[in-house]
Structure formats: C-alpha cells, structure tokens
Length: 138
Image (cartoon, rainbow, N blue to C red; front, side, top):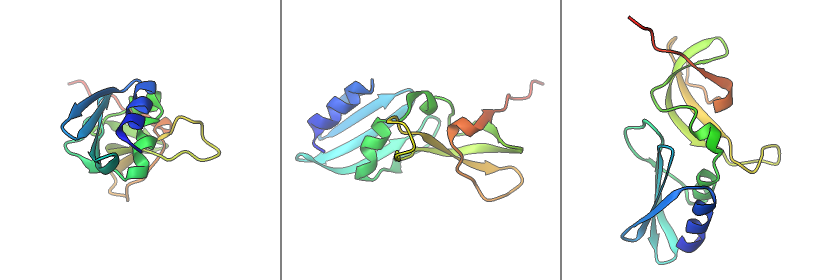
C-alpha cells in the first residue's frame, strides 16, 4: 500500500492524517498509528492504543485492518481500565483490531487482552463482551 492509498482510506475512516518526514501519522479517538515509508512501500508500522504507555509493532497487512477498525468498539476501553468478562474481573493490558472474517462486518472488531485478578492466564475477549467496572468511591 502506498502513502496516497493509506491517506485515502484513513480519511474515509475519519482519521486525522499528518506527515512526519517519511512517515504518515494517523490519529483517532486516542489511537495513533505511525507508518514509515521507504519510497511508496511501508517499511515499518507501530500502533499505540488509548492509555498504552508505549508503541507495539504492527504488521504491514494489519495497517489497513486497524484503519478500518470498528470505531464504536475502539473507543469503548483504554489500557488500564477495570473490566468484568463473564464472572471474572480483570484489567485491560492491551487492545488490538482483529482481521475481519466472512462472519464479521466490514468494520474490523476489537479484542481486549485482559489480565485477571485471580492470576489466571490472560484472555482475549471481544470488546463487546466486557463491561466497565466503576472505580470505588472512598
């Protein structure tokens, strides 16, 4: 994908697109995607989810997936939020946009990486399967 195609797709998805040297920076709702181009080919891409302290590597094929991410689901949670999934309580430690399948809509669904307080292995539920837990008021 060349930078012009990425800019067009990002504009359709209501991303704010800026240039930083040879990189395109896309921002929307606390998400930031940075794609460095070598000529017309993406050389490196990173993403930062809302509330995340740092960047995560993004495969080239996942750039479009994240740009097409389901906006309502992308704003539901931030890294660090306390959530309840089923009967388990945990904290969101990461989020990513899943590649769509024939069974999902054109907008790509969002998955959370949830670490549970019981010390269980993290799970990766859909954002629509989790519920916010309110902070306790002292």
